[in-house]
Image (tube, rainbow, N blue to C red; front, side, top):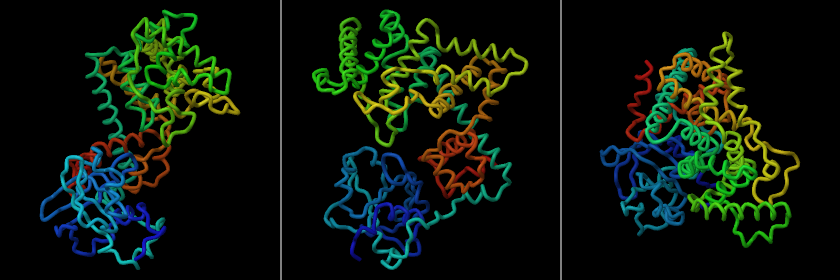
Length: 466
């Protein structure tokens, strides 16, 4: 068969997912007997195409990842042999072996077995295969979830979400030995400000540039606190453009702003020996222009400035305790209370730009939009407050956070929630309306699907919730 535009890696990935070749006894390129117990889950993130596959090679059970290409040589063209992310690949799947003399090796020089799909899928099948018309083989978990009552499915997801919340709280409490509650809140907010490519970088950056240090900068330069905070945040994250390029920016406001930032950063380097601590991407892939790291750091500068004379964590707790003492407290009022310090953040320059000297927005855009504010509350504030309630044995606060968690509105779905909705074959709209069900899907994924020691054939999911 001639290879043309009709054959793509996405198509081969779907063929692997539905296991079209399973009607045949399979042999790898090295003539090893192959059985596929689970194709794994389709990975939409960076790294191998499928995670946690389960196969048998010459009667040896193996669990790991799978990578798919049209040509065998694509493994080296894409430099997977140099990338540690691909060291857990146990099977390389391709349509054609175009480099018969070359072994497939990972960065440790370990050989990876190959399956050549063209030997098992005839051209007629390939031509009839409709890219948008396929169904993944039913898994044990989907069969189980579709055999029980709807109320039971809801309860399983809620239990998984609460378990995930408790796991997050335990990690927070473990970190208390080295950090204060305020610092941990700051780190969690920074992490929740990011997306898949930046969240861990932002969290690490918050550890390297602590909130107390930044508040001290704000207090040391009271008349220019925002400028100095942004100089520290932008300079230490390597987001400040090269100083020599300032005269080449077309916008006079940008030139003046950058000149002031550089002057402040050089002053801070002299006084505090500041230096670049990390390298944040200017415009991460797959993120909206308004969600750039530099706009997030601009928002953080205003949040820190507003709380420079108080302990941010104590302030939130004081407000919560006031609400708890009221006889008729509404969790929705609490949600508005938590959102207030984030939704009102405002910056005259960054309200209308996503990077330095970018085209000015036609309308002002909030530094942190409503959707991201809710994500920060869900992923930062609630785990922190739940951890505090567990640590201090504050039962009223504990009950309040659980109640809020259960009514919290759904946030935007992501690759994990989409994967699990498809894998469990969940179609009821209620699962898309409340965040607790999204968190439950994440909890099941973390505990079972993303567990390298797990097995789809012997998945304990149904036993845990029976």
